[in-house]
Image 1 (cartoon, rainbow, N blue to C red):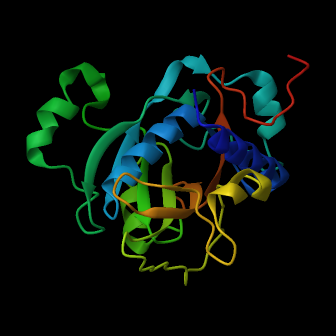
Image 2: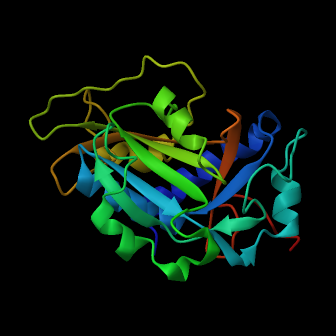
Length: 242
């Protein structure tokens, strides 16, 4: 079962996604349980980055009512591969710093990218990487890497303080910020008065202060993200008419 704070955060995030849907030409549906798995990997890897690959879940096509509810005024239904399917299981591909995380070690190739992946071989459709202590805004290297992606690229920004209490949060970057956090009433108990809010603590001893999540296409346009349950329905979206 997904942690309650993350469900609350997903609901709040989805409200923002729906309110701003006209600002995006396409969207993706990411199961929140996959995001929880990624967060666990990311927190264990701090302060390193991680790289994750996904394929569309071809057994779960997007619900027609969800598509209607989430499409913006400028919707492009044929922008990237796998666009009509919910995103499938995450695969941890690499871990390292910003100079190495986009490169897969040669010794991993046979194990991670075997022939059972079919005609796509070593290529995943969608990708995500983390930005430890940096906002979720694409760098120039991120934009270059996205040119080789058939689907979308996602970035998970993680604001944290080190076990010794030192903090470095790089946010002097222009771009659209998408915060992923529960309403104040849900996470206030994690913090202390007159101190920075703490969402939780990683197994490495780092205190997690904030999260951001965005997606973008290789053409440079932003992609809206909605966090869904196991049935592909965005958390917080009223689908009583289904």
